[in-house]
Image 1 (cartoon, rainbow, N blue to C red):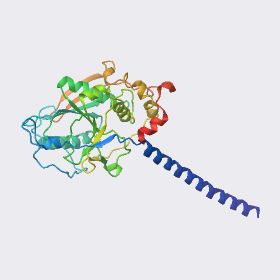
Image 2 (cartoon, rainbow, N blue to C red):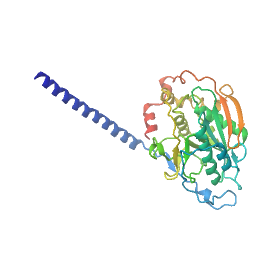
Image 3 (cartoon, rainbow, N blue to C red):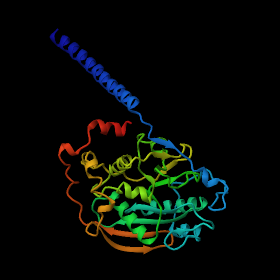
Image 4 (tube, rainbow, N blue to C red):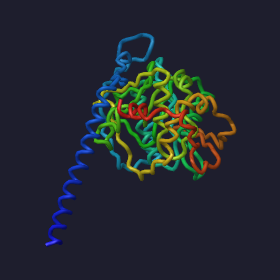
Length: 349
């Protein structure tokens, strides 16, 4: 009898626990939804550069009908095939239209150990950007060694080294594993910061969160320097894009994207890296660091150019950052951090 009553009690307790957990999660979900509704500011704007299709005697006018492209993610791409398809590309990965381009773009690709991905990206970008009649040059900034990857510092190096080559007025920060699916996704700079991705296949053609600014970011030279570029302090994967996003918010930039049917991207499959454990802690201190940790602070003690190789399809800049620290910069005292309310508002605006 005692065993039966104890079993009945444990079953009741188990059911009550499940109901309680369900209610807690439901309440949390409702709170997040309400938080998002009451704090929604509509930072994102949907834009499309229709001016590039208007008749003008001063700049290039896109006359070719652009549209979606079928991508074969599993094709056997070889360097020889890509070179043969893009014989008109100048040495160093530069192409100039037969008319006056609206802007001069520097495509900066942070890179290490993804050669097959790089070939697919180069083939896709050269094909698309030539149709868009834009003057561009591709810089692949490669981190040497086997230490933790520092994407933010590579992008800062890309800006510095590209400007030594030519006076570019627009920068495209492009992950090596992301391929645009539509030629109408015009790579151009506006007065704000432009996120070329509106829908990602890996996320079932959604974005991870509304305020996301990662993968393919397009921003003018002036705004890059106003935001002080990327942080140099994030080692390993994660949060450097959020840090840069917060900087663009701080200087008053809106975030623009193409329509969802145009800003579609495919991600080339690869093994995922673990997010660094101290990334969010460092991100909480972005506001106290953004003017002292970035593009303007990049100097010769922080990187060494190992080589600059001019290939037919791109210019490779290989750099050495030296050994990575055992852990990322230790966050400062609590009074230098943003509030958790701001943190939640950033991800759930």
